[in-house]
Image (cartoon, rainbow, N blue to C red; front, side):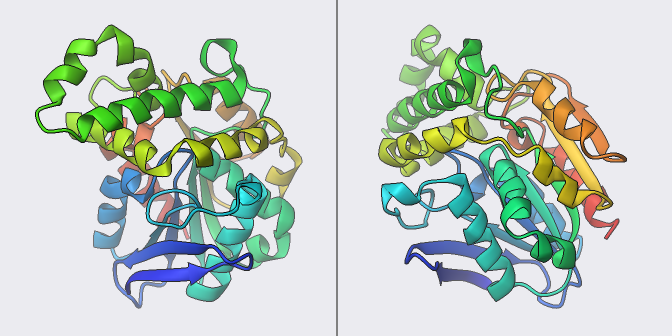
Length: 292
């Protein structure tokens, strides 16, 4: 239990942490998205562990506490392989896989690259504010690459400013300058000031080199057929109604390919819906995990 490090097949050190009972029959694996880190799941991880589930959070390569890879290794495919290694080496029993944004794309790549592992181990899956097709309209018609760049850029600037003492007044005063980036990266009428600041800090920790290196993989992501591997698995497709990074229609397209999935649109929540509406996402994930 607790924190651990895993060295991948290509030599990258990944950070992970378990919480909840070690003897929990079901493990919930929470995979964050682009320019984020494991802290984005803080509300849901705590609740799932308290409910008796074993919970694994981890930082993608080049994000959070994990090491920076060679930039050629910054791909969705490689993230999927990282996840497969974590599943095989560090977990036992049935799994609930939850992926937000690029993390959800990695779940599709996992099914594409490791279908037998998915068939043998995955008891439920949740796709949160994600897409099966990199051709989505994204922010202001910029596509997913442009949308994620705006997201990361706005959050990164905000995070840099927020590190300085007494800077909140400065950040708030800049209003119009940063509002677009902040709303794209952590949009929601009820998002706490703490979580907005956390979004910027996570992006700042990832850094622009890593974020830029992942962009080509986002735009070449086309994995609609891979969703068939999850047919028959209890599934949840959830997004915020105000998501400007990954259009809600992309979640509709995923749901269309997962017959029988639970489809949830959270009103007035944006891309980081798990922070904009932490209780609603918590309740949905708890209900999904209890189906396993």
